[in-house]
Amino acid sequence: MSAQFQDDDEKKEEKESYSFLKETIKKPPIDKRVATIKILKVAGLGLIFGLMACVSFFAVKPWASEHIGNTKTNVTIPKDEQTEREDESQEKEEQTAAPVLTIENYGQMMDEMNQIAATVEKSIVSIEGKTEETFEDLSGETRQRRSGVIVADNGVELLILTNDCIYQKGTPVTAIFYDGNEVTASLKQQDQHLGIAVYAVEKSRLSQNTSLQAKSVTLGNSNLISTGDPVIAIGSPFGTKDGVGFGVISGTKEQRYLCDGQYQILQTDMVWTKGASGVLVSLSGEVIGLIDAGDESGYGVMSAFAVSELKEEIELLSNGVSAAYLGINGTEVSDAIADSQDMPKGIYVSSVMPDSPAMQAGIQSGDILTEIGDTKIYTLKGLKDELLDYRSGRQTVIQGKRRGSDGYVDVHFEVTLGSAE
Image 1 (tube, rainbow, N blue to C red):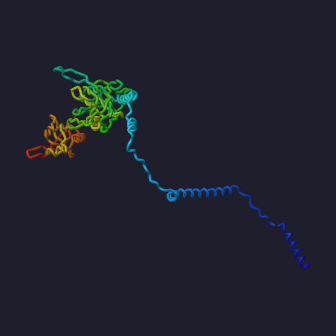
Image 2: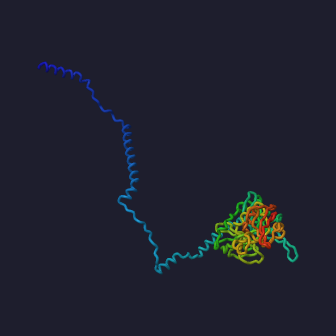
Image 3: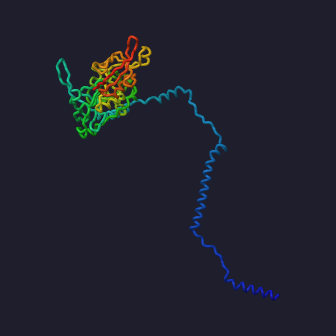
């Protein structure tokens, strides 16, 4: 037993002798940077989870709204009341009535129309020159003036459209601009049968002030004009220089039948005066009509050629090109007339101009023209449009019908077209 105690004492002594080798394990210090990254990762994962939860919620919400807790209801639109009390109806009528035009309203309206006129007036040019007239066998000279409007600028010249052909090429004429500047002008080209002309003024002759003010107008769409539309007459609408008139369109159905064509006429409620010239302008400031020079009667209502039907020829004249000339007056054989009179459809020739290409080709009154070149023609407008594609001196074949003892027979004419200048 003593031996056992001795062994225990030896083990205890041995354990104490190696106690200095005992290791104490300590946790390493916390790295703040690493800790921050871990926290951010956790927060990021939490944010992603939250976003996914929100998306899932909104995706499921329509289905949940439809199937859980909500019920569809029909939409009801209130019906109009079918009856009203007499006093309420009268009160409503008074409230919706057109406002009364006061003096202040009228004054404001006139001021605005005058502003439009003042803008366009800067593009109005008077063409003046000497013409020869005969009075009781005594020959004398007189100066005539027509108001025109600047329609184009070719970079070298200003081109002025007028409503009358009173001068021939080579006749010295003067262009008088809005600011009073007078410059020599020359006839660019004209259509004597339609009665319009284009004059040219070299831009190098203009003063600096005139160059700044004289601008081309915009040619509007006269097809959009209706009866009752307000209109402004500018130029010399009443035969005197620098006149302005205000009115309305009173009619758009009139047609003017002239040599080789048919043209729409815009009628106004303004009084026509001998020597009238100028243009009709819409409230948008666009030219919609060229005032008709009229006849020698000296009275009537002011009317104008609708500008939309003149644009193609104005372009030709502005480039110095003459419109081709056939030389017939006629009317259209419509479907109704063709059926009732047993006539072929086309253009009925009512008369032929003396010494015209039509007369030289053998076309006669009573003939019905049906084709020019390879194009069928049934209207005077169609004939005029086709002639605008030809040039003076061009040879073409015109097909037609002529009435014989056994009805209408085919005829054809070889025509050398002339010039309308």
